Image 1 (cartoon, rainbow, N blue to C red):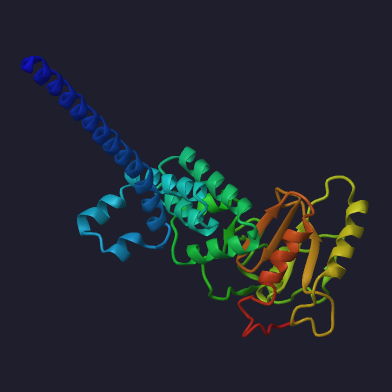
Image 2 (tube, rainbow, N blue to C red):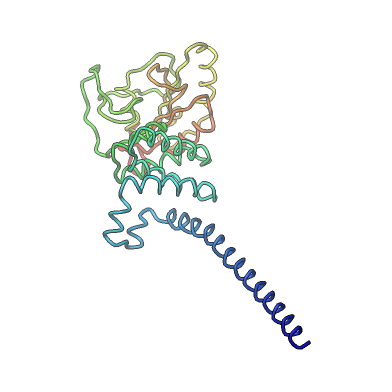
Length: 304
């Protein structure tokens, strides 16, 4: 009888021990799963909180060198960029990771992935002109050819320097760095009347206007220009006057051009964006951010 009771107690104790082990295993597994979910989020949050994470955290030299290896750095920055978008980090944080990934791209496919990432991030930013300004500000701190190519493929062009370019003889042919031009050598003469034009004007003239802080909107109408031009005139008349109109019309030149790949291109000094339709809100936003900010402007006061 005693042996039977002892056996039952042993079985009960063994079952209790098994239940404890099972509960402990579940807790351990739950902890590991939680860490697997939380640690990447922490990495993404920390990585997108610093422009230079390795410098902020003082990585040792060997780890810093390892982090700059293209084979490792490219997928790391891409993963952080994707993760930043998924957890709702600011678009600028994801964009910085895409920009860094571009610097480590090893193929045209890598650059295409980065360009698409920058484009999609720009579209969800809610303020594309501000986004472009931020990307160009980052690029001004230094970029390599791969990063410049990725930005250009995303429709973002940034001037490479701040030194004022020279004037060239009026009517001479100019080899501009970017298409459409957003900076560079230009004629001594500029377009003195702002508004909507139905005939092209050589870039050598209106690039000088950009230097004075004006905005240029190029439009390409392959078919019905007669319907588009009145819309452009109404839009131009609705623009705010900014600071340097001297009582005249808003400082935007709207010009036809066949030398653009999209329907429209909005251009300021050192910055341009491609636009597929007459998106007046986006163009107005670009104008508001960049007007009166050319390299010859001082404290937002510009030559006419």
